[in-house]
Amino acid sequence: MRVVLAEDLYLLREGLKQLLGAHGFEIVAAVDNGPDLLRALLDERPDVAVVDVRLPPTQTDEGLQAALAARRQVPGLPVLVLSQHVERLYARELLADGTGGVGYLLKDRVFNAEQFVDAVRRVAAGGTAMDPDVIAKLFARSDDTVGRLTPREREVLELMAEGRSNAAIGQRLFLSESAVGKHTASIFGKLGLAVSDDDNRRVLAVLAFLDGAR
Image 1: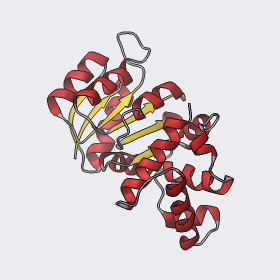
Image 2 (image 1 turned 180 degrees about the horizontal axis):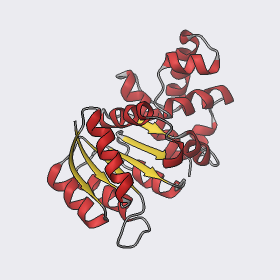
Image 3 (image 1 turned 135 degrees about the vertical axis):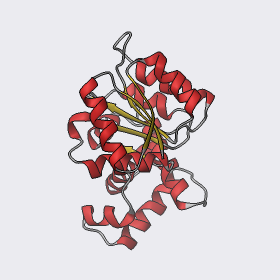
């Protein structure tokens, strides 16, 4: 799996390269600024990009703006954002095109290699990987569609946004897998998602939730 990595801190960038390389990823580019990131994404067309939000030259939103620009030219380009802070507007922009392959993790809440590597693989496969703190921030406001969900359905959808399976959601909420399935079916219905591949509907449901939380 080919990865473009963008991180301006040398030690963290080199650590991520070593970590991903040890788990079978091929680092095709590792850059430390926004312009180089955009060039790498368009030239390499990686399977996934792992991107810090704040990069030189401005140290504001260079990383995410480069990723967004690349996704406009390469629709659906998988992007996993790493940030120190929850940037709700950035998450909304990233999700605005309605495609999957997006993630948002907080650096100080990545606790082990398995968690991080699983998130990278999930995003590369077209899924989502959202930190619970990011989800909580986005839950602060929601549109009428998401507002129709029951509290339990919102809990299920929140865990779905983290990329958890029905079995994992059931374990977390002390529900049977069939009960979780009924909740997800209700969520799909309330969000107006027609019957299709279940994995695709899960991504669309998460996107509807996140794009509506603005």
